Each structure stands twice: as C-alpha cells, then as structure tokens.
Image (tube, rainbow, N blue to C red; front, side, top):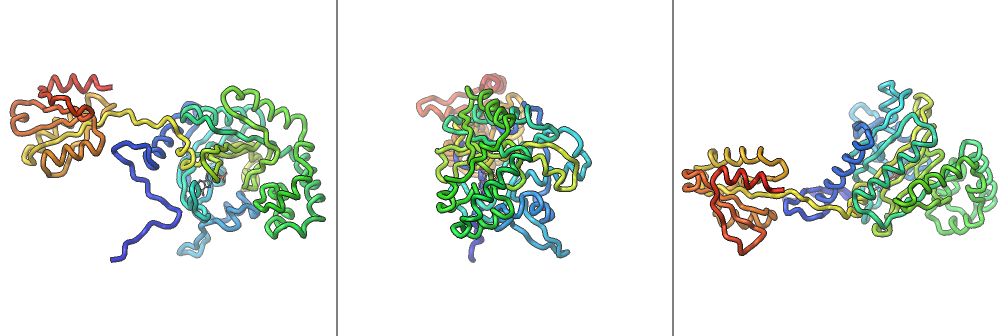
Length: 422
Ligand code: AMP
C-alpha cells in the first residue's frame, strides 16, 4: 500500500536515546534551556490556541507583510468561518490579554510552540517551525529594552553562541517616523517606474517596508535615499547607544539603520540577531517595540516590546549540548521473572533521580539485549537472571569500558552504587 508522507516543510522530531546532538535532541535541549532562562527573569508562561480568527493576523501582522500576503494557512471551518493557523505568537498574546481584560496591567509572558507559514522550504526555513517568544507588556521605552537585550545575552551565553551579531535600530517616535516616511516617499515616487509591483504597493501602504525589499534594483536605488538616522530624535539615538554600551562586553551589538523587520506592527526600538553559521537564513531571533498593537486590536493603550526566537535555527547554533544523565539498561533474563525483577528496577529509580533506568521490555536473548544497551549508549547493564533473583543480587556490567569485568552486587551494594553515580 502507498505510504503516507509528512507534508512538505514539516518535520517529525524523534528523540534519540543514544544521545547524539542531532536535530530532535538539540531542539528539546534548547527549549529546556530557554524555559529555565525565562524563569530566572520571572516571566510567566502563556499558551494560546494554534487556530485563531483570520482577521486577527490581518489586523496585526498587516496587509503589507509577506506573512499575510501569501503565507497564511487559512481555512474555512464547518461554519464557514475563516480561521488561520497562527504564523507568529504576539498577535494571539495581545488578543488573549484583551479578552481576559488584563490589557491595563504590566505583565511579562513567554510562550513556546509551533507556528505555520506557507513558505518555500529550505535549510532553516520550514512551513511548520517553533518559536519561543517573550512579551514585556505595560512598560514604555527604556528599561524594558534593556531587559529584552539582557535576555538575548543570557541565551547566547547559556547556549555557547559566540559567532553572532545583534543588530539594533530605532524606527523613530511617531513624529520622526512620519517625517521619514514622507521623505522616503518623496524620494521614491519619481522613481516608481523602476520599482517592482510589491515595492510600489509597500510604498503606498508602509514605505518603511521598502527598505526590506529583496529586489536588487530597489536596493541600488535606496543607496541614495534619505536615511532614518537623519530623522531620529536625540532620545532615540541615546537609547540605541545605551543598549549597545550596557551590553557591549557580553554581546556583539551593532546599530544598523537599515533594519526594519518584516511585520507591520513595530514602532521604535527593533532588533534581530544573526549568525553567519546559519547560511542564507541567518536570523535566529528578532523583535521590537509595538506600542500601538493593543489599541489597534480593540484594547487599551498598552506599551509593549517583545521578541520571537526561531527554535530550529537557535538549536543549530547551540554549543553547550551535552546530555549528562547516566543510562542504565536493565536486563531481565527470563520473562517469568519479570514482575519481581521489575519491582527492583522500580525501587532503584527512586534512589537517584539524575540517572535513567531503562528496563528492556522486549523478549530476546541476553546477547541481543546487550547489543541494544550498547546501541542506546547505556553506561551500565544491570542483569538479573533466576540465580540473581533468588540470591537478591544483580550483575553489573560497565559498557563504557570493554575490558572491565562484570561485578555481582547485592541490593544494598547496588543502592550504594546508584547513589554515587553523578
Ligand atoms: P519573525 O516572526 O518573522 O520575526 O521571525 C522570528 C524568528 O523566527 C526568525 O528570526 C527565525 O529564526 C524564525 N523563523 C521565522 N520564519 C521561519 C521559518 N519559516 N522556518 C524556521 N524559522 C523561522
């Protein structure tokens, strides 16, 4: 019969017991480290549904973004309602706090989960991918920017990421952004015959997004265009310098006035972390301030800043991966001994929570079970046969050292042995 395949751009993650830092193990490890970091900043978890009313993303991420233009997974449900698999997390978080009527409060939330975008799959770009995000809500420009960058530095440090640049920019306060957009429009309008259709559309709806154009012709034209830094207030420039100087010893921070980010809702401070180790898709996290979004979605006037981290890309950069738990493969020689022998394994597990005891549940010869134990990268095999069960002993075989002799230990010796495994 024809086999059913996973959908294009969507992957299965299967943890590997032999502990190699392959895709799945690296991703799970990276996710756990991120959760620990978020906890140390006293950030609370928030979980929102994967499916949302389609209009949520149209009204937040915006009509000029690639995401809304061509990448949404949108369907009509049985009631003819248009629903969409979330392409990012921020819009849902804001929808949720408005619905829960906590959009007048200061809060810090983190989330982690799958996102969907109908993109052309390539290395580091999938149709289903995971993002961890942080949203710092209710704080105006200032210390919240420092907190976000502090979290990024902590992530880089915990995961051993050194080859990375954190690009930061400021899109200006309301007045300077408006002045700059007008200047950009006035400069580009007479040249619009040289721009492609998409850039002309952006020019009319959100001129800043033209700076993000993929067209080389547009980029060539932009070389002579007005620059945002000539329009920024001292306060905006000071903020960029403050962030850079505060963390310059820990993070490689660069002020990049061409950085605009792909989503429509950003205002003020924006950033993106890139690493040349990732190849073409080099951004592993990004975000910025979005002070108008909550109001735009029908809520209160709530200043906010946040970021989204691409888990698959971040885990490719993770250098600290090492699973330091010891695995014991527990081998019961004959199936009529199983319940009693199993109970021994059950009791041993409670002695030391930093070791894993894997009772081999299948039938099979001692030889095949030892082969399996080696394949799983177990450090020890504990073997129980009829004689051992009667005499309350266990055979302990070290699998790390081929030449070591196997040792017979009684229960109290084995308890002591397990207690001392680090
Ligand atoms: P964005 O929500 O577009 O600002 O993206 C934030 C981060 O999510 C990016 O820096 C990437 O690391 C990651 N990301 C975005 N789109 C994809 C994708 N299609 N596949 C894998 N990672 C992605």
